[in-house]
Length: 321
Image 1 (cartoon, helix red, strand yellow):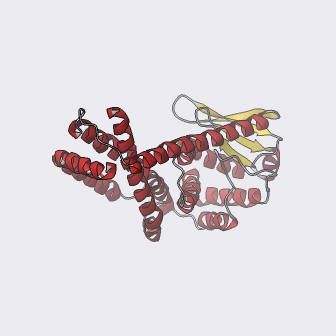
Image 2 (cartoon, one colour; image 1 turned 90 degrees about the vertical axis):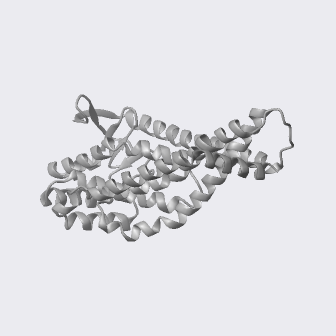
Image 3 (tube, one colour; image 1 turned 45 degrees about the vertical axis):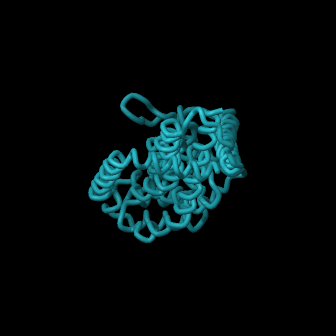
């Protein structure tokens, strides 16, 4: 009974923290978007992804580092006191959210595997691209109904090219487009998509859409090294945007063109006006500032840990009653 109470109380605290921080992130992330022009799109994409995961990370940390230790350390084992309905309801909500997230992620993964399997029926390997020091990603040509060009897979990624795209693009345009997809593979963007499915929460769709747009622009920037390559990639995006697939791309794939028209237009405009500044890494001061802030928070947490445990236990006592 003692451990069941501990599970209920810990999950209750985790659910409250997760919901509160999710609401804060959903309302406050737009403030970053106002200043995003100061940083590279790669930094923007990484920061948006971190913001999206922050509620889950913080709630898990609070639950494992504060709620559970405070209960085990300060809750008397011999005393049997009644537990109100609030922690039971919150615990059920927390478990339901975890199970729903797992089902949501599993459904997206199953759909992606089924879609890729259908592509494979008429596919053939035409080349491969190196990724890392000792591995490569196969490039497959398929006549199935698939996006013109897309990266699929998490553990064993592949890049898929339709026969229509191969016909439309010249050699330079195709090389630039393939480099774009390889950036998605190296950044493991399909894995990031799967994680976002697991932590799905109402009201986060706009933030996730902004992350996808920033990710596409970051891949555009990383795929080109001069204005000629940027124009080639812009031409590829324009041509492939006219190839509307019969079926929408699977969730866990990164198609070269799958965004709304406004987003595609913004990417093309950036590529046409490409300059060397877009390839420069973000300034070092945001990372240094973040490390300093993280160190200060960690030291403060360690110094106040005992007091935080006491406060957490007091809060759980109020919740139980």
